[in-house]
Image: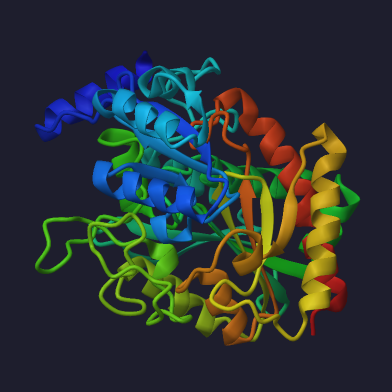
Length: 416
């Protein structure tokens, strides 16, 4: 209820009512053949459904699990169309508004204070970055790498003591609605600093390498997902000659950006932008990584949902030169994740594990010369989708932390 109150107060100040999702549903369908896949594509287009997985209609193929959100008004006719065409389906979420509210299932210790067990809005995260620097001045520094379209700062937290060491760059929250992702980046910084000097592995890592952590990549979109539309994905840039707002920042990198894999429709959730690195957020990140290329040996990005550990390539099914190495790291990484709560992850190259994509950050980083690049798709597998309850933040972060520590140890030992 507190979340709804905050949203309504902000909306009143802005003069815009937040989007509600009363009785909206999330369906899961599984087309058995190409004919059924084409019917689903058509239904998605004609009903303007919000695809949750995969993220664009052209990815839909036979035997693929497809999740999408449908309005109350259209849900009955859609269900009839699925029944009529004998397409297997079930309803994952019966009332999206209810689930949105139920997501906040952890009580605040002290109202208004930042908590690692809760989702934190942008203001709390900014205050937290400052707090981490003040608390650990010898280990944490805050670097402003740029600003967003709406002039919000893009902050990277550097954890480590020496500029000349190997480093890992990590980012969270490239897609606004994937809240578990920024929650993990905050958890990582907290655990890394807290366990230094106590945990053998983390102490060794921080004695020998640096971490650059961008807690929220898509700040404007993240703020919008808190104040106006919980299901918002893109950033908030204005597109010339279109009333549709936003670019998918994970399609805006210069990695097969021009290919037909990339969407050039500004109204699409996966719109690639007007040119590679056209977005201020993408440009800030790419400029920072390029300027630290000598030290950055790995790039890790965190998304949700579907429980996967992915590596290049997305824009081709050809294997990268160190495919065996990446595959080995991903396999052990997913094994490590499962040791704590038996959470099952799958792993592999993006194109063959999920679907082909152009313009992704890990392909760009890999082609730039960073030979260890990974994307985590965090919990869950669809029961909650983007609305993972707060009670699952800690277990998700704990198991992910194990995998990240393993990857970091591997980089320390093997990356040149």
